[in-house]
Image (cartoon, rainbow, N blue to C red; front, side, top):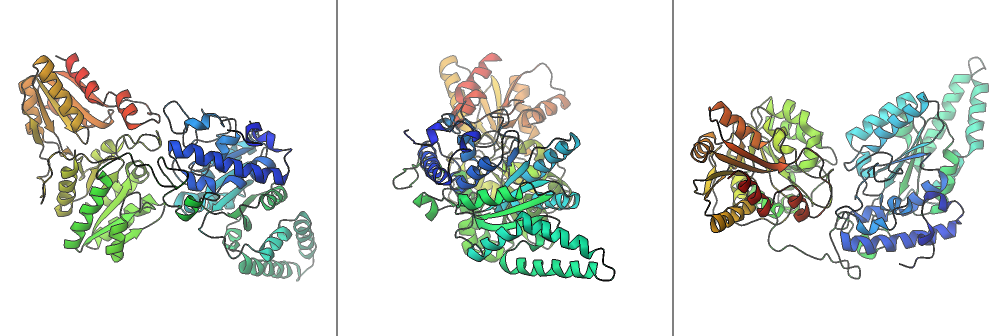
Length: 625
C-alpha cells in the first residue's frame, strides 16, 4: 500500500521529526491501513480506531522502549503494533504464526507487559515503576487504559495503592464515549494548560512554603488555596476524586487533537508522583460504519470495507443464540430466573433477555468477581441467577465461586460461553481451564452439552436443580443439531447417553467434539471393521461411572475426548475411576488440550494441531488397537 508517511515509520523514533500536521496525516493513513487489514482478518477495530492520536502522542513525547508504555488488554493497541516495527506483520493479524491481537512481550520489545484481559495495565505499571526506583533508574512509566477497564476493581485497587505510595507514574485514561464530553471546551483546555504549567505548579509550591512558616496563618491559608483550586476543578472536570486519592489529575482533553495531547504530555511527564491524564475519544473514529455501530466493531470478523457489513461464514444458530433463546423461554415461566453479565451483553447474546425482563437483568461491568458474589446474594435471597460469562473471564472469579457460592451451596448457574478453543483471539481467550476449575469445587455440578438439543436440556436441568450450583460450558460458533427435540426436558443429574454400541473400543466424549468422534468411529468401522462404543458423558461431575466403567470392562480400550486441558481434566477423572474400580490392563489415550498455551489460528487449524478432529481421533484409536 502506498502511504506517504506510514511506509517510512519503522519505530517510534521516526515520529520525532514529524510536524503536528504530518502526524495528523499519518493518523489518517494508520486508520485506513487498520480498516483494510482488519476487514480481512477480523479483530477489535473500533477501540483501536479511537486510540490512534494518543498512540502517536505517547510515542512522540516519550522514548520507548527505554520509557515503558504499558497497554491494557490490546483492544486499543493496533496503532501501537503498526508503529513499533510490525507494520508488514500486521497483515497477518490474528492468523496462525502471525501477529497476536493482544500484547505479547516475545513478539516485540515494545510490548512491555503481556495482556489480553482487562484492567492489568495500572497494576503492572506500578510494579515496573517500583522496580525502576529500586534500581535507581530514570525511565518513565506510562499505563494506558480504557474507561471500562479503568472502572474495574483491579484498576481501582491499583489507583489506591499508587496514590498512597506516591508512585512516579503517568496513567492515561482513554474515555471513548459516543460523543465528546461537554467539559472538553476552550475553557477546560485553558484551565488544563494553566494547572499543568510549570510556572503555576512552582508558584503554588513557593506560596505554600512561605505561608507554612507564618504562625497562625500558614496552614489555614494553604488550605483555602487548595479548596479554591478544588472548587474550580470540580466545576470544570471530574478530577477531584483522583486528587483526593493522591493523583494529580489533568483533563479531560480531546483525544483526537494531537497538538493538545503532545503539549499536555510534555508538560506533565516530568512532574514527580502519580499523574492521571483523562482524554475523550470517539470509538470507531474515522471509519463511518464503526462510528455508527461501535458495539459491532468492538470485536468483528471479516467485513466489507465499503458497506461495513460483516461477511458471514456461519449458517444456522450459534451456541450463544441457543443459550439466549432457551434462557428467555425459561425466564418466561420461572419468575425467579435472573441474568447477570459482566459488560458482555451482546457477546453473551442476552439483549433479548434485557429487553423482556429488565428488572431481572444486571450488567455489572468488567467486574467478574463482583458478578459472582452479587449472584450469590441474589440466590441467598431466593432468586435463581444465571451468570453468563466467557470461560476465559470466569478464571477471574475462582475464589468467589468457591467461597461465596459453593461453600454456601447456593443455586447459582454459571453459563460459560466460548469454552474450549476460540480461534483467532489466541491463548488469552481460549476457554480450556473451566472443566478443571469447576470440577474441583465441592457441591458443583459440571455439564458439557454436545449439541444444540443438549444445551437446551442442560439449561432446563440447571434451572430445576435446587441442591446447589451448576456450571454449563458451551463453545464458540455454530451449534450442531444432533437430534433436536421440540419440547426438551431435564436430564437426570450425572446420567450419560449411549450414542453408539461397540465391542472393540470405548470412546467417552465430553462436550461439543461429538461430531468428530462419530465420524472417526464410522470411518474405523467402514475401513477396519472396528466397532467403537461411543458414550456422551454429558456430566464431568458427577460422572456416570456405572455406564462408563461397564463399557471399559468390556472393551479394555479407552479413548476420552474433551476440549479442555488434559492436566486434571475429565479424562484423568475417568482413569481414576477405572483405577478405583480395580480395572487393570487397559490401553488408554486421552485427547484434549496439551500442557502448553495454544496460539491463535482458525478453529480448524487449532483442533487439528491438538488432534481434536475426526482424523486425529481415528489416529489415536488405531494406535491402541
